[in-house]
Length: 400
Image (cartoon, rainbow, N blue to C red):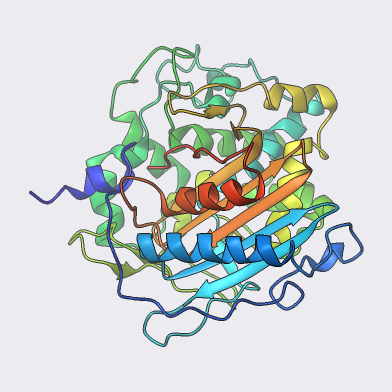
């Protein structure tokens, strides 16, 4: 029996395997030509790879996963101070034209948006304008049990609010018209039709409803649109010049096409120009390899926050998923700190390993699962088994 779109699309379960047509391999690019961070040419990560043996092992690991999981195109960036850097783009950005994947392209980063939204929220905490243990009802009316659900519960994914993306009506409305523009209040209304799933703080449940509410809090307290506040207070001081919060389906060039089976028919479709407004402050943002490299360290080390607030952010709790704990809009998995992202057609992983000062960024142009796992997770695991065998990326949080 074919699974229903509502279960396949945004439930907590992962997608099952699906194999795309065979993909050509784009030549591996030297790091300087394949997106070496423009702002970090003078750092201690030489752009000539990690050594012949390690480069070869990484090339093989990435090729094996890409073939196994049927991933059209892959970009992987690894930066290890004192050792070097490795940047590769393989596969195709467009399965029709066979255009090679480009390490300098933009990508939809999905739930990595949460790291930006929560950073914005925590800046307001540092300014004393809000408190993490304030109830959401203080800022946003109409939230079921809102007098007991705190901003901390929302950022930790422990609110108990029903995820609007699991509502069958939402799934139907989105997939019937992927170009539709959704407002935050429309999104929350899908989730608010349902009873809360547990008492605040009782357990972890990934819910985009939480981050949409936090986006509204940032807007209310700052008096700015969330995209403007993030641009002015997060992107600009971080010198992230290739990261944006779109208001519609706009997508800067160059970018790859994205491929998904999260469709009403269950058939693979091109989701490149779907309107990401349905994910808003939970998952609508766009970035590139250069900026994600910079952001990985900034968010993991708390460069924009006070030490006290960053410590609160990194106080993680069990998720129920082996090897992964979750804090305030951030995850930890075997030493790596950051977030993964997924929305129809695209997946990313951006993580930082403090013990090695290492950074890993993965960008792919499909979200079709393989063997019950996110394809980006398979890649991150394979890469870290090579570069940091004592700190293997065990898996991000399921994003559906």
